[in-house]
Length: 269
Image 1 (tube, rainbow, N blue to C red):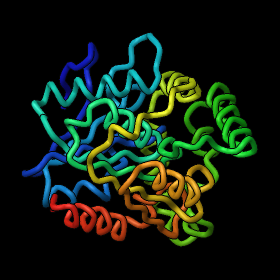
Image 2: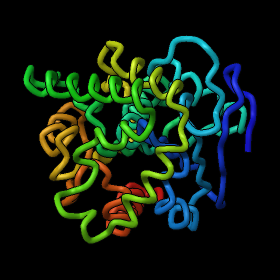
Image 3: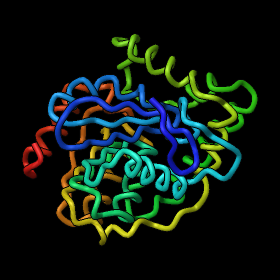
Image 4: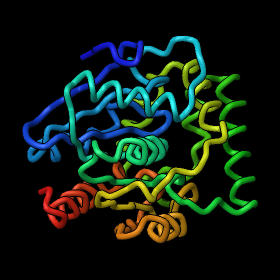
């Protein structure tokens, strides 16, 4: 479905009944990336997924892309749908969007779940980690310019834990199909927008329950980032799965159970 919000036509899906629950996907994905989560979470909540600007079927007119724009898009989407309070889960890049949104609009958030997102740590990454991250992003941009979205998928080296795809190749194929459906020109702007410097989020404004999820084999945002984030956000919980970066796809059953258990524990189940 589509509706106009923040000046663009945004593509979204909404399923289930009850308390609102919004899922924000990661870079290179689309709302389709939540295929393991929506069928389960929608048994208990009214689940909203959408294509972040620069992805999927949401319009991406000329103009700067950055986290501020993505936060404004989400705010406008919730307003257009009449959502006054929600649980918010962001994965990877979506975690950065979700965290900034929650800090800017704490009155709209029942609970916040930050999944496999390096953007959540208040402490800056080490110089070496920053160099590696910048080098990988530049390699992705260079490949994207030459060969389009296939190069993007090939550049990601730790989406899953070592050996996982050898035993579950169908997961990799399904993820690759949805990544390749994105427009390379729009995604190039996404990558450039992600590289833009942003001030650290004001986590002191958070007054909701917060769960931080990490993957033990994730070199983007692993256990160290989760621990730093937990220290930076008072009263937050952290959980580490034996996965790579894409915990929602690699361990969907355990992931969904952890999310639901967290929400039950804070009275939102």
